[in-house]
Length: 504
Image (cartoon, rainbow, N blue to C red; front, side, top):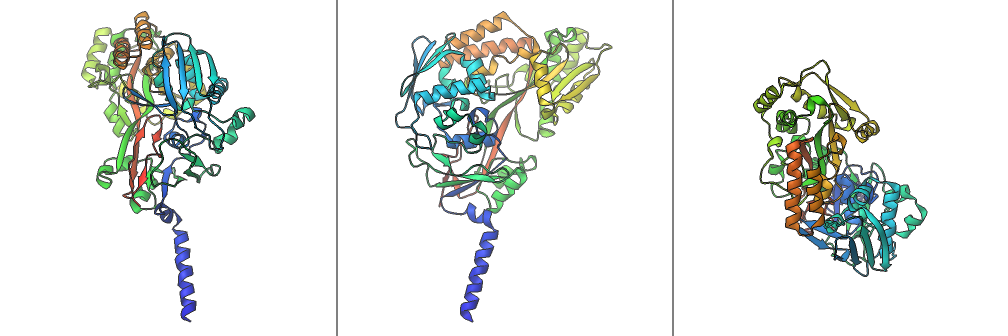
Protein backbone atom coordinates (compact mmCIF):
# COMPACT_ATOMS: atom_id res chain seq x y z
CA UNK A 1 0.00 0.00 0.00
CA UNK A 2 2.75 2.39 0.94
CA UNK A 3 4.46 1.65 -2.36
CA UNK A 4 1.23 2.46 -4.21
CA UNK A 5 0.84 5.74 -2.30
CA UNK A 6 4.47 6.64 -3.03
CA UNK A 7 3.95 6.02 -6.73
CA UNK A 8 0.75 8.08 -6.68
CA UNK A 9 2.51 10.98 -4.96
CA UNK A 10 5.34 10.83 -7.46
CA UNK A 11 2.88 10.91 -10.34
CA UNK A 12 1.05 13.89 -8.82
CA UNK A 13 4.32 15.79 -8.30
CA UNK A 14 5.40 15.11 -11.86
CA UNK A 15 1.98 16.16 -13.16
CA UNK A 16 1.98 19.39 -11.18
CA UNK A 17 5.50 20.16 -12.34
CA UNK A 18 4.41 19.64 -15.93
CA UNK A 19 1.35 21.88 -15.48
CA UNK A 20 3.56 24.69 -14.20
CA UNK A 21 5.86 24.33 -17.20
CA UNK A 22 6.72 28.01 -17.62
CA UNK A 23 7.72 28.45 -13.96
CA UNK A 24 9.74 25.23 -13.93
CA UNK A 25 11.59 26.32 -17.09
CA UNK A 26 12.25 29.78 -15.66
CA UNK A 27 14.09 28.20 -12.74
CA UNK A 28 15.86 25.47 -14.71
CA UNK A 29 19.63 25.80 -14.21
CA UNK A 30 21.37 27.20 -17.25
CA UNK A 31 18.12 28.16 -19.00
CA UNK A 32 17.09 31.80 -19.42
CA UNK A 33 13.41 32.34 -20.24
CA UNK A 34 12.61 35.50 -22.20
CA UNK A 35 9.20 36.94 -23.01
CA UNK A 36 8.78 38.94 -26.21
CA UNK A 37 6.26 39.91 -28.85
CA UNK A 38 5.81 37.86 -32.01
CA UNK A 39 8.82 38.97 -34.05
CA UNK A 40 7.77 38.02 -37.56
CA UNK A 41 10.73 37.86 -39.94
CA UNK A 42 14.16 37.14 -38.46
CA UNK A 43 16.06 38.26 -41.55
CA UNK A 44 18.54 40.83 -40.18
CA UNK A 45 17.79 43.42 -42.89
CA UNK A 46 14.10 43.24 -41.97
CA UNK A 47 14.60 43.38 -38.19
CA UNK A 48 13.48 46.66 -36.65
CA UNK A 49 11.42 45.78 -33.53
CA UNK A 50 12.82 45.07 -30.06
CA UNK A 51 11.90 41.38 -30.40
CA UNK A 52 13.53 41.03 -33.82
CA UNK A 53 16.72 42.85 -32.93
CA UNK A 54 17.07 41.05 -29.59
CA UNK A 55 16.91 37.66 -31.32
CA UNK A 56 19.09 38.71 -34.25
CA UNK A 57 21.64 40.11 -31.79
CA UNK A 58 21.96 36.71 -30.12
CA UNK A 59 22.21 34.82 -33.42
CA UNK A 60 24.75 37.07 -35.16
CA UNK A 61 27.99 38.90 -34.38
CA UNK A 62 28.23 42.40 -35.93
CA UNK A 63 31.31 43.68 -37.71
CA UNK A 64 31.62 46.45 -35.10
CA UNK A 65 29.77 47.87 -32.12
CA UNK A 66 29.48 51.57 -31.31
CA UNK A 67 29.60 53.09 -27.84
CA UNK A 68 29.14 56.86 -28.12
CA UNK A 69 32.26 57.98 -30.04
CA UNK A 70 34.08 54.64 -29.89
CA UNK A 71 33.89 51.99 -32.60
CA UNK A 72 34.87 48.53 -31.35
CA UNK A 73 35.72 45.87 -33.96
CA UNK A 74 34.03 42.53 -33.26
CA UNK A 75 33.68 40.27 -36.32
CA UNK A 76 35.94 42.77 -38.09
CA UNK A 77 39.60 42.90 -37.19
CA UNK A 78 40.02 46.38 -38.65
CA UNK A 79 38.24 48.99 -40.78
CA UNK A 80 40.61 51.36 -42.57
CA UNK A 81 40.84 53.95 -45.34
CA UNK A 82 43.41 56.44 -46.58
CA UNK A 83 41.03 58.70 -48.48
CA UNK A 84 37.53 57.88 -47.06
CA UNK A 85 36.53 56.67 -50.55
CA UNK A 86 38.35 53.32 -50.65
CA UNK A 87 37.69 51.24 -47.54
CA UNK A 88 39.14 47.91 -46.41
CA UNK A 89 37.40 45.66 -43.89
CA UNK A 90 39.53 42.80 -42.57
CA UNK A 91 37.64 39.97 -40.88
CA UNK A 92 38.68 38.02 -37.83
CA UNK A 93 39.75 34.55 -38.96
CA UNK A 94 37.94 31.47 -37.71
CA UNK A 95 34.36 32.77 -37.70
CA UNK A 96 31.78 30.16 -38.70
CA UNK A 97 28.09 30.04 -39.45
CA UNK A 98 25.94 27.79 -37.31
CA UNK A 99 25.83 25.26 -40.17
CA UNK A 100 29.62 24.90 -39.85
CA UNK A 101 30.57 26.77 -43.03
CA UNK A 102 33.20 29.51 -42.79
CA UNK A 103 32.32 33.20 -42.73
CA UNK A 104 34.27 34.80 -45.58
CA UNK A 105 34.57 38.17 -47.26
CA UNK A 106 32.42 36.75 -50.05
CA UNK A 107 29.68 36.01 -47.48
CA UNK A 108 29.45 39.72 -46.74
CA UNK A 109 29.66 40.95 -50.33
CA UNK A 110 27.05 38.47 -51.58
CA UNK A 111 24.75 39.28 -48.65
CA UNK A 112 24.99 43.04 -49.25
CA UNK A 113 24.19 42.57 -52.91
CA UNK A 114 21.14 40.48 -51.94
CA UNK A 115 19.98 43.10 -49.42
CA UNK A 116 20.13 45.83 -52.07
CA UNK A 117 18.50 43.64 -54.74
CA UNK A 118 15.63 42.52 -52.48
CA UNK A 119 15.10 46.09 -51.23
CA UNK A 120 14.56 44.98 -47.66
CA UNK A 121 13.97 47.87 -45.23
CA UNK A 122 17.60 47.88 -44.10
CA UNK A 123 18.84 48.30 -47.67
CA UNK A 124 18.84 52.07 -47.17
CA UNK A 125 22.20 51.81 -45.36
CA UNK A 126 23.64 50.61 -48.65
CA UNK A 127 21.67 52.60 -51.22
CA UNK A 128 21.29 55.91 -49.32
CA UNK A 129 24.03 55.98 -46.69
CA UNK A 130 27.11 54.02 -47.82
CA UNK A 131 26.36 54.35 -51.57
CA UNK A 132 29.11 51.97 -52.81
CA UNK A 133 30.06 51.92 -56.48
CA UNK A 134 31.97 48.68 -56.04
CA UNK A 135 32.24 45.94 -53.40
CA UNK A 136 34.48 42.90 -53.73
CA UNK A 137 36.10 40.12 -51.75
CA UNK A 138 39.84 40.65 -52.25
CA UNK A 139 40.57 37.38 -50.43
CA UNK A 140 38.96 35.12 -47.82
CA UNK A 141 39.10 37.75 -45.07
CA UNK A 142 39.26 41.10 -46.90
CA UNK A 143 36.31 43.16 -48.12
CA UNK A 144 37.07 46.17 -50.31
CA UNK A 145 34.47 48.92 -50.69
CA UNK A 146 34.66 51.89 -53.07
CA UNK A 147 32.20 54.71 -52.37
CA UNK A 148 30.84 57.45 -54.60
CA UNK A 149 32.30 60.20 -52.36
CA UNK A 150 34.47 60.59 -49.25
CA UNK A 151 32.51 59.28 -46.26
CA UNK A 152 34.19 59.07 -42.86
CA UNK A 153 31.29 57.46 -40.99
CA UNK A 154 31.72 54.03 -42.59
CA UNK A 155 32.82 52.39 -39.29
CA UNK A 156 29.57 53.60 -37.66
CA UNK A 157 27.45 52.27 -40.51
CA UNK A 158 29.09 48.83 -40.32
CA UNK A 159 27.34 48.31 -36.97
CA UNK A 160 24.04 48.00 -38.84
CA UNK A 161 22.11 44.72 -38.47
CA UNK A 162 21.24 45.03 -42.18
CA UNK A 163 24.88 44.21 -43.00
CA UNK A 164 25.09 40.93 -41.06
CA UNK A 165 26.19 38.04 -43.30
CA UNK A 166 23.98 35.22 -44.57
CA UNK A 167 25.28 31.71 -45.35
CA UNK A 168 25.67 30.37 -48.86
CA UNK A 169 22.84 27.89 -48.25
CA UNK A 170 20.24 30.68 -48.42
CA UNK A 171 22.10 33.01 -50.78
CA UNK A 172 22.04 30.26 -53.40
CA UNK A 173 18.41 29.15 -52.89
CA UNK A 174 16.85 32.55 -52.14
CA UNK A 175 14.48 30.80 -49.73
CA UNK A 176 14.13 33.96 -47.67
CA UNK A 177 10.84 33.00 -46.00
CA UNK A 178 12.22 29.65 -44.84
CA UNK A 179 15.39 31.29 -43.56
CA UNK A 180 13.37 33.97 -41.75
CA UNK A 181 11.74 31.20 -39.69
CA UNK A 182 14.95 29.28 -39.00
CA UNK A 183 17.92 31.62 -39.39
CA UNK A 184 21.55 30.49 -39.45
CA UNK A 185 23.81 33.12 -37.95
CA UNK A 186 27.35 33.62 -36.69
CA UNK A 187 26.77 34.53 -33.04
CA UNK A 188 27.14 32.91 -29.62
CA UNK A 189 23.72 31.23 -29.81
CA UNK A 190 22.09 29.16 -32.55
CA UNK A 191 18.42 28.40 -33.12
CA UNK A 192 17.88 24.69 -32.59
CA UNK A 193 14.44 24.53 -34.23
CA UNK A 194 12.32 26.62 -36.57
CA UNK A 195 10.40 29.50 -35.04
CA UNK A 196 6.85 28.53 -34.00
CA UNK A 197 4.48 31.51 -34.42
CA UNK A 198 2.56 32.20 -31.24
CA UNK A 199 4.93 29.98 -29.27
CA UNK A 200 8.62 30.77 -29.76
CA UNK A 201 11.87 28.86 -30.08
CA UNK A 202 14.93 27.76 -28.18
CA UNK A 203 18.46 29.06 -28.59
CA UNK A 204 21.50 26.99 -27.58
CA UNK A 205 25.13 27.93 -27.17
CA UNK A 206 27.11 27.58 -30.37
CA UNK A 207 30.16 25.57 -29.36
CA UNK A 208 32.26 26.68 -32.33
CA UNK A 209 31.78 30.39 -31.55
CA UNK A 210 35.15 32.13 -31.45
CA UNK A 211 34.09 35.36 -29.75
CA UNK A 212 33.21 36.25 -26.18
CA UNK A 213 31.59 33.23 -24.54
CA UNK A 214 28.28 33.50 -22.64
CA UNK A 215 28.32 32.94 -18.86
CA UNK A 216 26.12 30.32 -17.21
CA UNK A 217 23.31 30.58 -19.75
CA UNK A 218 23.32 27.37 -21.79
CA UNK A 219 19.92 27.75 -23.44
CA UNK A 220 17.51 30.62 -24.01
CA UNK A 221 13.79 29.80 -24.09
CA UNK A 222 12.12 32.49 -26.20
CA UNK A 223 8.39 32.74 -25.44
CA UNK A 224 5.84 34.73 -27.39
CA UNK A 225 3.86 36.81 -24.89
CA UNK A 226 2.33 39.72 -26.77
CA UNK A 227 0.66 41.26 -23.71
CA UNK A 228 3.18 43.48 -21.84
CA UNK A 229 1.21 43.12 -18.60
CA UNK A 230 1.43 39.32 -18.82
CA UNK A 231 5.21 39.51 -19.33
CA UNK A 232 5.61 41.87 -16.40
CA UNK A 233 3.44 39.81 -14.03
CA UNK A 234 5.16 36.55 -14.98
CA UNK A 235 8.54 37.99 -14.03
CA UNK A 236 7.11 39.12 -10.68
CA UNK A 237 5.70 35.64 -10.04
CA UNK A 238 8.90 33.85 -11.06
CA UNK A 239 7.39 32.20 -14.14
CA UNK A 240 9.62 34.23 -16.47
CA UNK A 241 13.20 35.44 -16.15
CA UNK A 242 13.20 38.46 -18.46
CA UNK A 243 10.41 40.67 -19.86
CA UNK A 244 11.22 42.84 -22.87
CA UNK A 245 8.14 45.06 -22.45
CA UNK A 246 6.65 47.11 -19.61
CA UNK A 247 3.03 48.29 -19.86
CA UNK A 248 1.96 51.88 -19.35
CA UNK A 249 0.17 50.92 -16.11
CA UNK A 250 3.45 49.69 -14.60
CA UNK A 251 5.70 52.51 -15.78
CA UNK A 252 5.71 54.24 -12.39
CA UNK A 253 5.72 51.09 -10.22
CA UNK A 254 8.53 49.48 -12.25
CA UNK A 255 11.21 51.20 -10.18
CA UNK A 256 9.59 50.00 -6.96
CA UNK A 257 8.86 46.46 -8.14
CA UNK A 258 12.32 46.04 -9.71
CA UNK A 259 14.50 48.72 -8.08
CA UNK A 260 17.80 47.42 -9.45
CA UNK A 261 16.39 45.06 -12.08
CA UNK A 262 15.07 47.29 -14.85
CA UNK A 263 16.55 49.10 -17.82
CA UNK A 264 15.35 51.76 -20.27
CA UNK A 265 17.22 52.29 -23.50
CA UNK A 266 16.72 54.43 -26.62
CA UNK A 267 15.41 52.77 -29.77
CA UNK A 268 16.18 53.80 -33.32
CA UNK A 269 12.57 54.76 -34.13
CA UNK A 270 11.96 58.51 -34.26
CA UNK A 271 8.85 60.57 -35.06
CA UNK A 272 8.37 64.05 -36.52
CA UNK A 273 5.62 66.31 -37.80
CA UNK A 274 6.34 67.08 -41.44
CA UNK A 275 5.30 70.35 -43.09
CA UNK A 276 4.66 70.78 -46.82
CA UNK A 277 6.74 73.92 -47.46
CA UNK A 278 4.96 74.45 -50.80
CA UNK A 279 1.81 75.30 -48.85
CA UNK A 280 1.78 79.13 -48.87
CA UNK A 281 0.10 79.19 -45.44
CA UNK A 282 3.09 77.31 -44.02
CA UNK A 283 5.85 78.97 -46.05
CA UNK A 284 7.09 81.25 -43.25
CA UNK A 285 9.47 79.71 -40.70
CA UNK A 286 7.68 81.71 -37.96
CA UNK A 287 4.44 79.85 -38.68
CA UNK A 288 6.19 76.49 -38.52
CA UNK A 289 7.83 77.45 -35.22
CA UNK A 290 4.42 78.42 -33.86
CA UNK A 291 3.09 74.97 -34.67
CA UNK A 292 6.11 73.38 -32.99
CA UNK A 293 5.55 75.36 -29.79
CA UNK A 294 1.88 74.34 -29.80
CA UNK A 295 2.72 70.63 -29.47
CA UNK A 296 2.27 69.36 -25.91
CA UNK A 297 4.62 66.39 -25.98
CA UNK A 298 4.34 65.67 -22.26
CA UNK A 299 0.56 65.41 -22.50
CA UNK A 300 0.85 62.93 -25.37
CA UNK A 301 3.55 60.98 -23.53
CA UNK A 302 1.26 60.51 -20.51
CA UNK A 303 -1.74 59.73 -22.69
CA UNK A 304 -1.78 57.81 -25.96
CA UNK A 305 1.99 57.18 -26.03
CA UNK A 306 1.92 55.41 -22.66
CA UNK A 307 5.40 56.48 -21.51
CA UNK A 308 7.05 54.53 -24.32
CA UNK A 309 9.00 57.49 -25.73
CA UNK A 310 11.80 59.97 -25.03
CA UNK A 311 10.68 63.51 -25.79
CA UNK A 312 12.77 65.18 -28.48
CA UNK A 313 15.80 67.27 -27.55
CA UNK A 314 16.60 67.89 -31.21
CA UNK A 315 16.22 66.23 -34.58
CA UNK A 316 18.68 63.41 -33.93
CA UNK A 317 17.36 60.83 -31.42
CA UNK A 318 19.33 59.59 -28.37
CA UNK A 319 20.15 56.39 -30.28
CA UNK A 320 22.50 58.41 -32.53
CA UNK A 321 25.84 59.26 -30.86
CA UNK A 322 27.89 62.47 -31.25
CA UNK A 323 24.87 64.72 -31.84
CA UNK A 324 23.19 64.96 -28.44
CA UNK A 325 22.34 68.29 -26.80
CA UNK A 326 22.49 69.36 -23.16
CA UNK A 327 18.84 70.46 -23.25
CA UNK A 328 15.84 70.61 -25.57
CA UNK A 329 15.93 72.79 -28.66
CA UNK A 330 13.51 75.74 -28.66
CA UNK A 331 11.07 74.08 -31.16
CA UNK A 332 11.10 71.02 -28.86
CA UNK A 333 9.44 72.93 -26.03
CA UNK A 334 5.74 73.54 -25.31
CA UNK A 335 4.86 77.25 -25.18
CA UNK A 336 1.27 77.90 -26.33
CA UNK A 337 1.46 81.63 -25.53
CA UNK A 338 4.53 82.04 -27.73
CA UNK A 339 2.81 79.96 -30.43
CA UNK A 340 -0.20 82.33 -30.32
CA UNK A 341 2.04 85.41 -30.52
CA UNK A 342 4.01 84.06 -33.50
CA UNK A 343 0.81 83.31 -35.40
CA UNK A 344 -0.57 86.76 -34.66
CA UNK A 345 2.62 88.38 -35.96
CA UNK A 346 2.52 86.33 -39.15
CA UNK A 347 -1.19 86.86 -39.83
CA UNK A 348 -2.29 83.38 -38.73
CA UNK A 349 -3.44 80.44 -40.81
CA UNK A 350 -7.08 81.33 -41.20
CA UNK A 351 -8.70 80.75 -44.56
CA UNK A 352 -11.49 78.92 -46.33
CA UNK A 353 -9.50 75.73 -46.88
CA UNK A 354 -8.97 73.41 -43.87
CA UNK A 355 -5.47 72.29 -43.04
CA UNK A 356 -4.78 68.68 -44.00
CA UNK A 357 -3.16 66.37 -41.47
CA UNK A 358 -2.20 63.02 -42.98
CA UNK A 359 -1.06 60.13 -40.81
CA UNK A 360 -0.14 56.50 -41.24
CA UNK A 361 -2.86 54.33 -39.70
CA UNK A 362 -0.12 52.78 -37.54
CA UNK A 363 0.16 56.17 -35.79
CA UNK A 364 -3.56 56.34 -35.06
CA UNK A 365 -2.97 56.14 -31.33
CA UNK A 366 -1.44 59.61 -31.18
CA UNK A 367 -1.99 61.51 -34.45
CA UNK A 368 -5.62 62.58 -33.69
CA UNK A 369 -4.57 63.84 -30.25
CA UNK A 370 -1.74 65.86 -31.81
CA UNK A 371 -4.14 67.36 -34.36
CA UNK A 372 -6.47 68.36 -31.51
CA UNK A 373 -3.60 70.14 -29.72
CA UNK A 374 -2.91 72.24 -32.82
CA UNK A 375 -6.59 73.12 -33.14
CA UNK A 376 -6.51 74.78 -29.71
CA UNK A 377 -4.15 77.55 -30.88
CA UNK A 378 -5.92 80.75 -31.98
CA UNK A 379 -5.15 81.40 -35.63
CA UNK A 380 -5.05 77.75 -36.66
CA UNK A 381 -7.88 76.87 -39.06
CA UNK A 382 -9.92 73.73 -39.05
CA UNK A 383 -7.69 70.66 -39.29
CA UNK A 384 -8.86 67.61 -41.20
CA UNK A 385 -6.98 64.51 -40.01
CA UNK A 386 -6.80 61.53 -42.33
CA UNK A 387 -5.56 58.05 -41.57
CA UNK A 388 -4.06 56.14 -44.50
CA UNK A 389 -2.97 52.49 -44.70
CA UNK A 390 0.80 52.07 -44.69
CA UNK A 391 1.32 51.59 -48.46
CA UNK A 392 -0.89 54.57 -49.34
CA UNK A 393 0.79 56.78 -46.76
CA UNK A 394 4.28 55.86 -48.00
CA UNK A 395 3.17 56.64 -51.55
CA UNK A 396 1.96 60.04 -50.35
CA UNK A 397 5.34 60.85 -48.79
CA UNK A 398 7.21 59.59 -51.83
CA UNK A 399 5.25 62.04 -54.01
CA UNK A 400 5.93 64.99 -51.65
CA UNK A 401 2.70 66.40 -50.21
CA UNK A 402 1.85 69.80 -51.67
CA UNK A 403 -0.10 71.08 -48.68
CA UNK A 404 -0.73 70.58 -44.99
CA UNK A 405 0.93 68.50 -42.30
CA UNK A 406 1.85 64.84 -42.08
CA UNK A 407 3.51 62.46 -39.65
CA UNK A 408 6.96 60.99 -40.27
CA UNK A 409 8.20 57.96 -38.35
CA UNK A 410 11.62 56.63 -39.32
CA UNK A 411 13.55 53.55 -38.34
CA UNK A 412 17.30 54.15 -38.36
CA UNK A 413 19.51 51.24 -39.38
CA UNK A 414 22.85 52.52 -38.10
CA UNK A 415 24.25 54.90 -35.46
CA UNK A 416 25.52 57.22 -38.23
CA UNK A 417 24.60 60.91 -37.73
CA UNK A 418 24.49 61.22 -41.51
CA UNK A 419 21.71 58.63 -41.74
CA UNK A 420 19.73 60.47 -39.04
CA UNK A 421 19.81 63.79 -40.93
CA UNK A 422 19.99 62.87 -44.61
CA UNK A 423 16.65 62.59 -46.35
CA UNK A 424 14.80 63.63 -43.21
CA UNK A 425 13.21 66.70 -44.81
CA UNK A 426 12.82 65.11 -48.25
CA UNK A 427 9.04 64.51 -48.06
CA UNK A 428 8.50 68.19 -47.14
CA UNK A 429 9.97 69.54 -50.38
CA UNK A 430 12.55 71.55 -48.40
CA UNK A 431 15.94 72.23 -49.99
CA UNK A 432 18.78 74.44 -48.77
CA UNK A 433 22.29 74.69 -50.19
CA UNK A 434 23.80 75.66 -46.83
CA UNK A 435 22.36 72.56 -45.15
CA UNK A 436 23.65 70.36 -47.97
CA UNK A 437 27.15 71.83 -47.65
CA UNK A 438 27.28 71.36 -43.88
CA UNK A 439 26.02 67.79 -44.14
CA UNK A 440 28.63 67.05 -46.82
CA UNK A 441 31.33 68.47 -44.54
CA UNK A 442 30.22 66.12 -41.75
CA UNK A 443 30.55 63.18 -44.18
CA UNK A 444 34.14 63.90 -45.16
CA UNK A 445 35.76 63.80 -41.70
CA UNK A 446 36.66 60.73 -39.65
CA UNK A 447 37.26 62.53 -36.36
CA UNK A 448 34.31 61.80 -34.02
CA UNK A 449 34.39 65.27 -32.45
CA UNK A 450 34.29 66.91 -35.89
CA UNK A 451 31.53 64.57 -37.07
CA UNK A 452 29.48 65.67 -34.06
CA UNK A 453 30.23 69.39 -34.47
CA UNK A 454 29.47 69.50 -38.18
CA UNK A 455 26.37 67.34 -37.80
CA UNK A 456 25.02 69.71 -35.15
CA UNK A 457 25.64 72.68 -37.46
CA UNK A 458 23.64 70.97 -40.19
CA UNK A 459 20.93 70.09 -37.67
CA UNK A 460 20.82 73.71 -36.48
CA UNK A 461 20.03 74.82 -40.02
CA UNK A 462 17.05 72.48 -40.14
CA UNK A 463 15.93 73.65 -36.71
CA UNK A 464 15.97 77.26 -37.92
CA UNK A 465 13.98 76.56 -41.08
CA UNK A 466 11.94 73.78 -39.43
CA UNK A 467 10.52 71.79 -42.34
CA UNK A 468 10.07 68.99 -39.78
CA UNK A 469 9.09 69.40 -36.14
CA UNK A 470 10.87 67.06 -33.68
CA UNK A 471 8.41 65.06 -31.57
CA UNK A 472 9.94 62.02 -29.80
CA UNK A 473 11.79 58.75 -30.21
CA UNK A 474 10.81 55.35 -28.90
CA UNK A 475 12.52 53.66 -25.98
CA UNK A 476 12.55 50.10 -24.74
CA UNK A 477 11.90 48.70 -21.25
CA UNK A 478 12.98 45.45 -19.65
CA UNK A 479 12.64 43.94 -16.17
CA UNK A 480 14.10 40.70 -14.87
CA UNK A 481 13.99 38.27 -11.96
CA UNK A 482 16.52 38.14 -9.13
CA UNK A 483 18.25 35.08 -10.61
CA UNK A 484 19.32 37.20 -13.60
CA UNK A 485 22.08 39.82 -13.81
CA UNK A 486 24.26 41.69 -16.29
CA UNK A 487 21.35 42.85 -18.49
CA UNK A 488 22.27 45.51 -21.05
CA UNK A 489 20.57 46.84 -24.16
CA UNK A 490 21.29 49.08 -27.13
CA UNK A 491 19.28 50.59 -29.94
CA UNK A 492 20.46 48.40 -32.81
CA UNK A 493 20.59 45.10 -30.93
CA UNK A 494 17.83 45.20 -28.31
CA UNK A 495 18.61 43.22 -25.14
CA UNK A 496 22.12 41.78 -25.44
CA UNK A 497 21.28 38.18 -24.60
CA UNK A 498 24.90 37.11 -25.06
CA UNK A 499 25.87 39.11 -21.95
CA UNK A 500 22.94 38.14 -19.70
CA UNK A 501 23.99 35.76 -16.92
CA UNK A 502 22.36 33.66 -14.20
CA UNK A 503 23.20 33.34 -10.53
CA UNK A 504 22.50 29.60 -10.37
